[in-house]
Structure formats: C-alpha cells, structure tokens
Length: 388
Image (cartoon, rainbow, N blue to C red; front, side):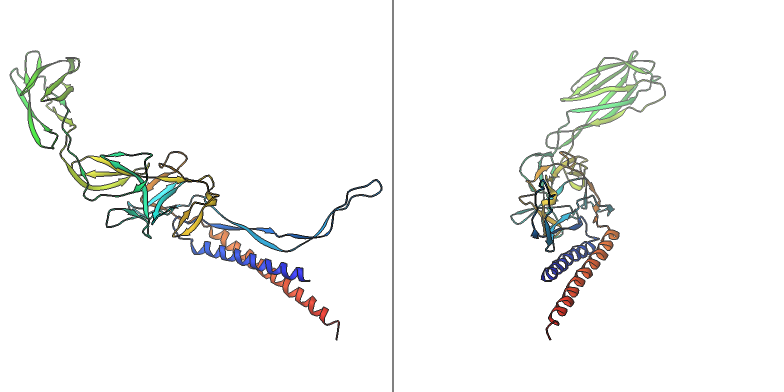
C-alpha cells in the first residue's frame, strides 16, 4: 500500500515539473531567441521481491520479480532548432541563421545568447537589452584583428577615415576622330596629397595628324593612335603626373562623340563617420563622408560541442558548463557558425500546438497519479475498518 502512495506522490511531483516547464515555454512564445525545453522522465529504483534463477536440468530458469517505486525527472532538455525570422528594419537587430551564439560580457562573466536585439549605448558600445556588452574583434585603420583578443564592439561616433594620397587615376571615354588638327580638349584631374589637400591638374588632349597627344604640366606627353576607333598605341598608355599614374587605356577614337572624362582616382580627403551597416560575416562597415568604407569591428560567434549542456542564467543568456565544452570562437559563416543577418530577429521556436498537447498530457498524468493516492487511501481505510 505504502509503495503505491509514494509512487503516486512521485508522479504528482514529476508531472508538476512537466506543467512548470510547459507553462514556461508558453510564456516565452514571443521571446526572441528563446529555445523550448522538454521534460524527460525515468523510473526510480525497483524493489526486488524475487531474484532470477538459472535454468537447470529438470527445471527452467526464473525471471526476477520487481515492484517499481515511482517516477522521477531524468532531465530537462533544450531544443536548439532554428526559430523563424522576423524582419524589424533596425540595423542593430541581428539574427544568427544557423549554429552559434553571440558572445556578451556582463561584469566579469562571459555569457552567450541567441537574442540579437541590440542597441548602442551612450559610449557607442553595442549592448543587449539588459546592458551586457557584445564582444568581437576590433579594427585598426579598417583592418580587423581576426583571431585576436575579444573586445567590446564599439561604433565610434567621432571616427575619422584618414586621408589618402592619389597614386593612380584613369581617364576613359571617346575622343572625336573628326576633330581638326590643333583642336584641344582639357580635363581637370583632382588629386590629393597625404594630408588630404586637394588640387586640380589640367590634362590636355591635342589633336594631331596621327591621333591625339596627351600632356600635363611636369609630365612627358603620350601620343595616342587609333584605328577604326580602337586604341592601337602605345601598348600601355600611362601619363605620369607628379607621381600619379594616369591610365589612358580606356579611351576610344570614334567620330562625333566627345565623352572623355576622369573615371577613377584613389585619393581622398579625411572623412567623418556618417553611418554603419552589418555584413553577413559579422563585420561592421562604416560609411564616411569622404565616400570611403572601413571595417569598424567584427562580431564573433561561439560554438559548443554540446549546446544542450549550457546553463540558462536569465536574460535569454547562457553560461558554459563542464558538460557543454569550451566555447570555440570564430567569425560568422566560418567554422560551422551560421551567418548574421541585420534587420531581423530570431523568434522563439516554441510550437504552441505541441505545448498545449503537453499541457493535456501533464494534466491527465497528474490526475491519474492523484487517483493512485485516493485509491490507496481507500484500501488503507478498508484495512483499518477490519478492527471495530
């Protein structure tokens, strides 16, 4: 009798845990990055009433007889299946498409999360909703220190893209073949020095009997010849102006069309940060007022041999444990990590239809175990009534 009472009690406790887990899943149905959990049951120790016997020459063997002592919760597993994507349009909202966790720092503790609803604080640092600092690799002069020590990902509002001296340029387009000898065309080439100072260099095209001569102050002239509109000489036409190599190979010589112009030059003045965006590999790309783009840093992801071994620490975050394995840090899209998508969030992977079914199963299991207790109580009542 008493064994059935305690078996019923263990069933009530276990199914109460199942109700708690299921209720928590339903409560987090709209929590970004939440992963559903499930209860796993196992029976407890069984009392041996008769041991097994080996078969003999004149009699068969006997099986053991055991009475179970109830049920217990073997574990609560986490389902790390991918949740659906929800577009938000916010540049600081990030979603991991695949495996991996964002790495954050809260005080001196390193944590991991799938919830990518980030913001930028007053110091320009990328933070979670509870203020944890998002970790990654920093960048110096646009070069990310891949594989280096992790640091806080920062969007520096006062960042400056340094000036760059002009070393190469290009002119392309068409020179009118039907122009009279002696005709000149002038195109201004803007060049920058190492300090970002800009100056204009006039490049002159002079029509000759054989083609066009290209010249500029301080540069040796280059003679261009054409046949049926196509450049025939020299083989690699380059005009060198104050150390700037001007490529002329893109010029043609058809009639009635005058479109020659400066098409490229690699110099620039200094610029300030205007905006930033997130690339699929987790790199923060800054766009500067001088038209340049530079990497500001790169978000990293952490992978684990056994993600189910992670411990939930609140705030949609996890901490590594002895059974999760050490975190393997890498960039998004590398080493088995998923890609990062900006402007979207990963929603909870809770399946409401499954959770409501689990509610019914847990409720009926609880009721059945309660019936075990009441039935055992009725039998005990009959036993005590034998003596009146």
